[in-house]
Image (cartoon, rainbow, N blue to C red; front, side, top):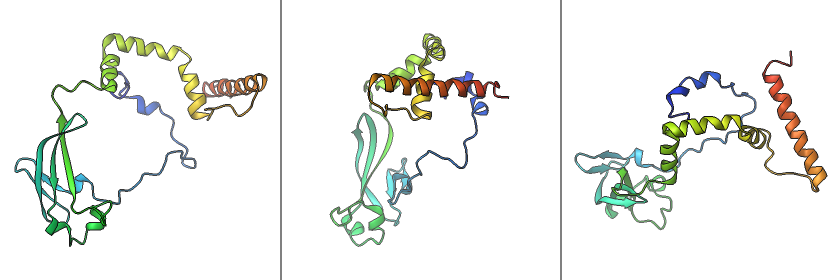
Length: 186
């Protein structure tokens, strides 16, 4: 919601800079195989050229893949069989005969909106913005901080007293951190 709302366009300047010594993000995977962007697709002419420079045959122009329209292309056996780039082009070069590639160009007409699209539409409405703004006065940010940032996605102790003690300890850390961020630590 904040990425689509013009009221939050300057929010990036308020974010704390990440610690360069502690990066929790997973390393990006590099694609080992050719992706559709590596193929030269000309929508006007209806042609597709593979990375080896061979022309692919169009075998579908209005194909429906999960509610999205696509154009499909397939390589010729005479071109794909002896190709030197076969290992980089196909996931299973020993069993797959030719390469197939799809280029998507829109949603199928009459396709119902996904739940995510319906929720985006509801949140972006005037009433939705008012309701969403009220979430910040609730305890949702506290639970998000404890679960995501502090790593409390499950209790490690057993028994009601021990769990209650662990919960209160995490809440205490949360409140001390809040005080420190608001300048009470100086």
